[in-house]
Length: 436
Length: 91
Image (cartoon, rainbow over all chains, first blue to last red; front, side, top):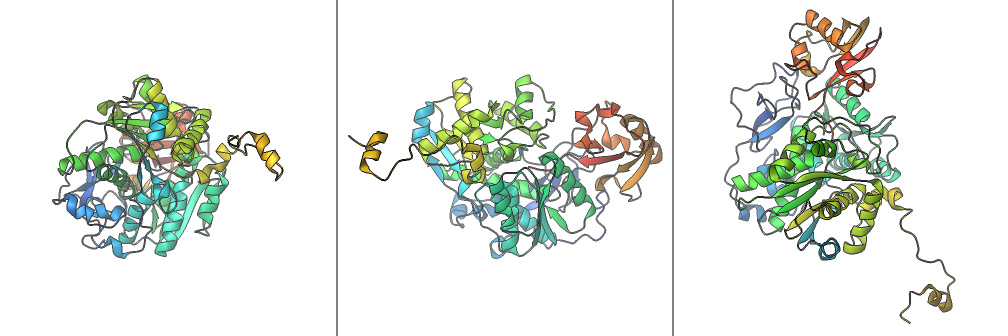
């Protein structure tokens, strides 16, 4: 699944107008050798490019990996830079300020497993990253690319979590940030961005409208690095670290099944890419595993296509409380379908009520407060069990991508005080909560 | 019908570096034919061999994605702005 090796004669400048393009230093992108189109294989030099000039397909980072050992990785820092040899970042990445995300906890979920009837269940809890979502991983890689390409502005269109991560990383790195969000975004996500940057721009429209605007700006403004637009190939590679960590934390082996939320689909494809790279590098045993994708029914174009048995993903207008998954036109949706089908997994979706139920379920069983995206993933895990699509005897990992404090409104009417009482023992006894 | 078309960076080699060009046509299909006559080769980058919009291209008439309208049959009123944008973004 990794991109092809780059031809040394590959260029890109002749098809990508970049008249005063900064020449990156040697080693700016580590062991990356170039960019290659995932659709047609066309090759492009490393630079601020994201769409294939031949077919508009997604450009992916190609590498010439050196021999990497488990010991070398284990001797690295307790963040994503322990995997720097496998990322498009320079060898001295740890010397430049960023939020140092990653190496989040992998929790054995005995209570949730018992509730769902899964014998061996783990939660990869990425809500403990610096800005409380997995986005810190991808943003750290995008920040490195932005620096190496001499970008002056660090920017993104976002459903919220990404804006938080970009704004925070930019503040720490001392680079100007501008983050664009849909104006109807949850207040906590707005505050969590605005606290780090003066340049939070609320756009009247949905995420896909914001994304369109960002693409237009990226095409017109010089010196802007939109993390998920013109430096997207580097940014997306950061999600591989979720896969690397899961394998390392399981004792250098792959799980049998993994359930991953799907917005653009990038995270799912990169976790799969990470597993494949670990196999090729001999760092884990080559074994089969199943990948499952999770969507909310109110924005489920990939799930709909999966169930219809087609590759044609019809864009939708999102209508769900799971706003961080509300991408109606998912860029990597087609690849999610390929991976889930090839591995024997599936793509499933659940209603907003089921999302809320699952948020409560995870909290009450494992003490993890997830946001709506995590509720979607846990709820889909439950549905996969109930519908017989997931083998409950196999080791399974479910990814929690963000913290519930960011989406309090979604759950506020589901949880409340059990009782409001006078400050007397008699009143307490009347609640029935006492031992006697 | 005269419309303006915003051209993405990777197609500007066809338009002499112009980011916005004029075209004619009552529908998006007509507009693409008009573009092709002015800038030979550009149409094949936007539609595939079967004449359908390429998977990784989004085309907007005004602010609306034509996939929510009538695809290539989407009408293009006089003065409309059409935007061609790579779909591989976001997330």
